[in-house]
Picture 1 (tube, rainbow, N blue to C red):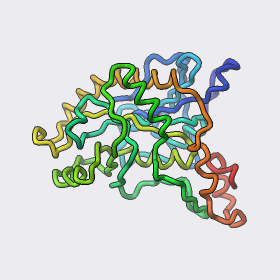
Picture 2 (picture 1 turned 135 degrees about the vertical axis):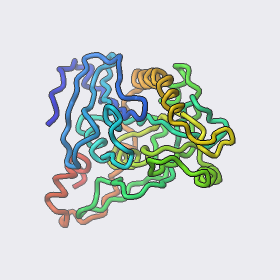
Picture 3 (picture 1 turned 45 degrees about the vertical axis):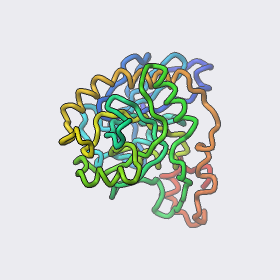
Length: 297
């Protein structure tokens, strides 16, 4: 069960919480007020860790360290469904994923930020849908991020001094190993922009959960295609992540402070997606999907 939230004032109730999933280097969020840790149980198992919920003025922010505190979970071990479902349980309608990535383009230099608008899937064996077990749904995913949310986070990152590139393709690889040089050159031949290991499943599940979703990608290195990079240097990556953690937090705070809740089309993604005869849906499946798709079932 979730811990109870602190009482909120009437003006606070009109602003749904903003969700933030933090990746490598972003494990906490100092600066929030009235902070509480919330442990959530979901129909899809346990999330990566407790959620950190706090207030930035009148805006509530719900933060989850993607890999758990202490960075305990491999990308392939993440329970993406539980992580996103937990955000939904806590009332989140707008979800931002912050992630470390490698660059596949010369102009996207280490230390820069990228707000991608497309994905290529190079993962396997991960759960990337809430559906199945008697219910079939096909959501539109041609535009996998919310343009409004992406624009807001790009503007916020520039506002606090970040060098930001809006648009580009994020290759989501399985990991945990980094790319071979052949793979890195292949992704560049596809005109991809950055490479990471986590955000695609979050984008797919956020769409099914009818959340607006955007990614703020922090470039830590040139992937091994670059002639100056003999290998991806994990020590250098960690040093850059630590240096950029404050910039990432300030970007998120500016984003959350200025973002207004709206009725976006992302929040109606399931309206025509479920194709299963409602009379054929098993009771257990219907119950498991109650929060995600209950109004359509």
